[in-house]
Image 1 (cartoon, rainbow, N blue to C red):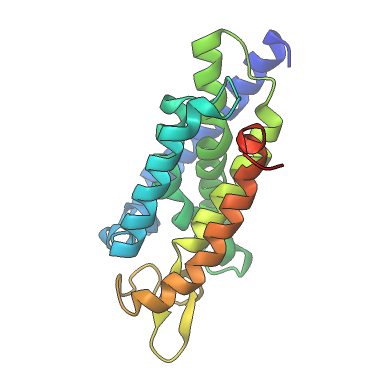
Image 2: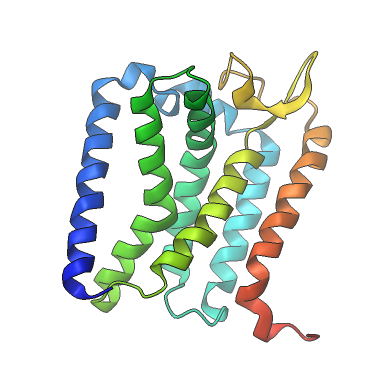
Amino acid sequence: MNRSVALGYTCVWAVLCLAAIGLLVRDRATYAVLKRAYWRYLSAPWKLLTFGLAFGFFLIVAPYTGDPTWDRVDASFMSLLTYATAPWAVGVLYRAARRKVAARQAFVAACAWLLSASWSYDLYIFVRDGFHPASWFWNLITSSVLYASAGLMWNLAYVPGRGVIFGFMDDAWPDLPAGSRQGRVMAFALAFVVLVAATMVPFFWDYLPVR
């Protein structure tokens, strides 16, 4: 992507983000991401533990992936944005598809997804290096897989009478118990850990002792 196209693309997504922020501020009482219940939902010990492990992993290995655009700075802010927004964004998009929330909330959630998984990365590399990253499209795909996986995993919840489900499938979401049956929930979370690990293999292929 040449510089003029990159600048145009950046302006477009910046306008979209400003529009999303405007909707968020205007109708803030209706957005779960701004409510205490959502942050209690994210405070389950197993969620904090898995986030801490993932954050530490990405922070440590970022310089050793062979990708010059991946460093500890973008690894840090993308991890934080993912933890803060992915469970909400994935949940809202699901509920919007079932017409349980307004379409404008889906727009805001989509902007949060793209900002976390792609646009913040694009802007950081553009500012750091003076050009739009050539890897922007593949980063969008890979990071979106990680974002969706994180959003689904951190939405796992035990609901009495229903067992382990994605919390956003319950009408009370996100006002659900944060920490009940954590062992059972963690067993399901392991599947997402495996998926994330598989997604990361190509980045470390050259460093694997056996290939």
